[in-house]
Amino acid sequence: MRVGVYYRNDEVRLEERPLPSIGPGEILVKVLRSGICGSDVLEWYRRKKAPLVLGHEITGQVAEVGPGVKGLSLGEIVFVSHHVPCNTCRSCLRGHKTACLTLHGTNYDPGGFAEFIRVPRLNVEQGVFPLPEGVSLDEGVFIEPLACVLRGQRRADLKPGEAVLVLGSGISGILHLALARFCGAGRIFAVDVNPCRLALARRFGADEGWLAADFVPEVLRAANGGQLADLVVVAAGDPRAFAQAFRSVEAGGTILFFATAKPEERVAVPLSDLWRNDIKMLTSYGNDPHDARTAIEILQAKRLPLEEMITHRLPLERIGEGFRLVAQGGPALKVVICPHDRGGLDL
Image: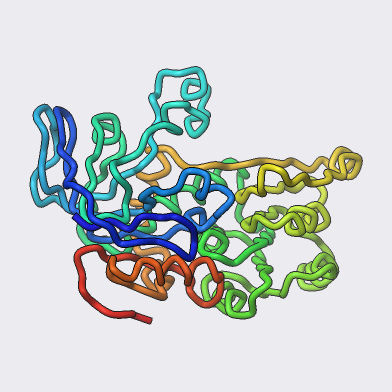
């Protein structure tokens, strides 16, 4: 079978691999759609593990069912989670399932940028979800990223009417904007370094958007009745975005660090200001099966314009082009790979 093998952002090769063999409790899935995530192009994170087959936002069709598998049938259209928790460790029992060591160690074989994947037993048991009627293959690639955003906003306890500022208008930031709008947030604002991304932010949920600059807190106050944001979501891994978050949050507000910085980078925390103004800081990584189910329910209700966020659909042989588009961070908002299609660039 054909796979897209990642070496670095500008070198993703189409190679041949043997078709995976499945065992008891496992399934083989024919990958029909696979989204390129912003985390896929974090070279500092990915290159140390290269070469490898990435891809964790997939929808596909059950092509083979191993002995002992229940509740799944050949030909069924499914979404497959790459990371699943054990549900028995201390982290899981305390409600921190994305800190579970099992979750961090699970994955499918080889990765979503392949024609087929083998889904291990634990993932079959906890991470395979049939797509409901009316949910398209394209919409299905948003289940994983939307579930991550859902978890972040649930942890931040976003309430109706609260003002939201999202720093970074890539696909994660756009999903935060759209979900905040769906959840009844008040005024919603976006910041990015790219005018194209700001236009997309306004299209998908932001009331106003500004280019990243030191004066953002001032224009935020002017646009929000003299107040800063009740929730600031950092969806860009730039240290300047983290610094700006501290200056943009209202007293009693929350900063959600949805993105991360490079391991060697450090951010100066104005502890006295945070302490005096009762500011809460949170991180959010990944999602768990509960978040995935909630994301599917939102997709089924057609409450978010997810398919409109797809800017490119590419066949597997053009995966290198897809990675370059995402890494450039321009108008390519969501790039979806179609491993079994032979189509051209779809804008």
